[in-house]
Image (cartoon, rainbow, N blue to C red):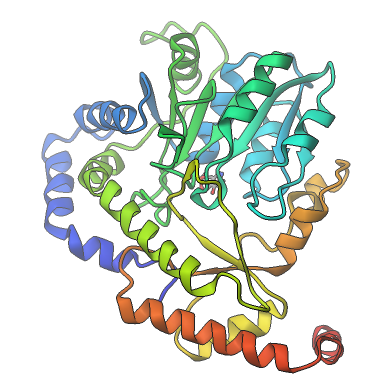
Length: 382
Ligand SMILES: *Cc1c(COP(=O)(O)O)cnc(C)c1O
C-alpha cells in the first residue's frame, strides 16, 4: 500500500537517534521544560527566520494563545478561510471572538483577497491566514491590506513549516504565527506539540505568560492564563527531526513537480495553479475531479491511499452553521478535491503508479456520461 503519510519510514530512518534522545530525557528525569525545549525553541525560531519561538501543547493551543496575546476587545471579528481544518475557526470562538468566513481563489485555492477586503468593517480586528496544504498565501497583499485597515495578522502555518513567500519564511511575515507538530505534519512529534513564532517581543512575552498560568515567575500570576507546554520528550524528538526537514520538504517539492508535469492540462482533472512567488512544502498534494468517492475506491483497489482535506467547509459543521458566509469556491473544492500521496518516502515507481492509476480512472470516468454517474451516485447515497 502506498500510504498518504509514511511515519514508519521516517521513524526507521531516525530510530537510534530518537531512542538516544528519549533515553537522555529519562536519564535527566526532567520531563517539563529543560534543555530539549530551550534548544528546540531556539532552533525552530532560526528555521522560521523569527526572533522568538514558544513551544506549546499543540497547534490548536498555539492559535488560541496567539489570538489571546493580541488582547483584542471581546467579540472582535476575525477573518478566516472557510476551507481549513476546523481549529482555525474554533480558536476564534474559544477566545471570545467572531469568525468571518471568506472564500478561496478557484485556481490557487489561496485566500480570496477581494472578498477579504469587502468583509472588513469597524469591528474587524484580525485576519487568520492559513497556508493550507503547505501552499503559502500571498502575504504581500495580505500585509498591505492589514496595514491599510489596522488589522493584526495571525499565520496558521500548521501545514507549512518551511514554506516561503518571495524567499521569506511563512510564519515570519504576519504579527504572530502558529505551528502544529501533530505526527503527520511535515515536522511531526510522536504525540502532540505546537509552537508560536513572532518577531514581536511584546506578543512573545504575553504568549509566554498566557501559556504559563499568566505568570512570569513561580507564584506571580499577573493575568488569567492556562497551561500549555511543548512536552520535553516531544521537544527532544523534534530536535532529531528538525535538521532533516529541509531535505524532506525538497523531496516533497520534487514529487509535486512530477505530479504537476504529469497531470497538468488533462481533461477531467484539475491541479492547483500556484504563484511563482510561492515556495510550497506540499503537506498535501490536491487534485480536483468529479466522482471522488469512486476514485478513492479505485485508487485503494490499486494499492494507493488517498485523503480528503476537507470534505466540508467549516460553516457546514453545526457549531459554525449560524455564521453567514458566501464561499462557493471553497464549497466546490470541498466537494471535489482529493489528496494523493506526496511524502518524502515515495519511490519513482510509486509516483508513476499514482499518476498511471489516477489517469486510468479519469479516462474511464470521462467515457461515461456524467448524468448517468449522477443517477448512480444518488442511489448509492440513498
Ligand atoms: C493540524 C492543524 C491545526 C491544529 O493543530 P493540532 O496540533 O492538531 O492542534 C490547526 N490548523 C491547521 C490548518 C492544521 O492543519
